[in-house]
Image 1: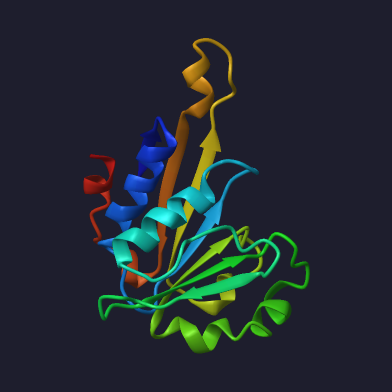
Image 2: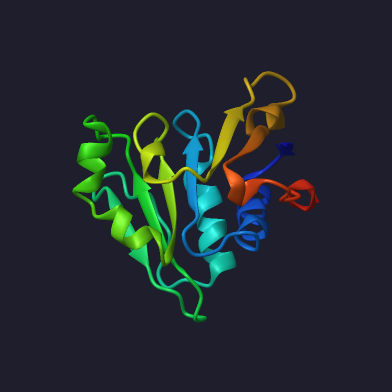
Length: 161
């Protein structure tokens, strides 16, 4: 599934819509260069899940847990950018304990956390290359790739609205 996202506000709205498809135990891997919109998308996920606290980049603290205010799953937001040890280093964060009852979103997790779950959603965000008109620099192409039985048959097309 490919979605064109034209503004940061649209990226946040995409996150809110995606939150409606997520359930406890889901692992979401976000990939994209610096400034691509990974944290903005996660902010929208937090809004859609109804979690407590401002969703900001956990680059320096590595992970943040945002409990639900609505009785739904907590959002565990991880930034694996500074981690180099792969799954061993990720296990120190006890994400496998949180995974069953939370939605776990890992920025920069590709190649590091796939072993946490055979079922996951990869979200790849590619930025526009600037140029004219100036707004083209804000355009993102978002690809959603479901892996495993959890995502078989899930219709992601409503996310493109």
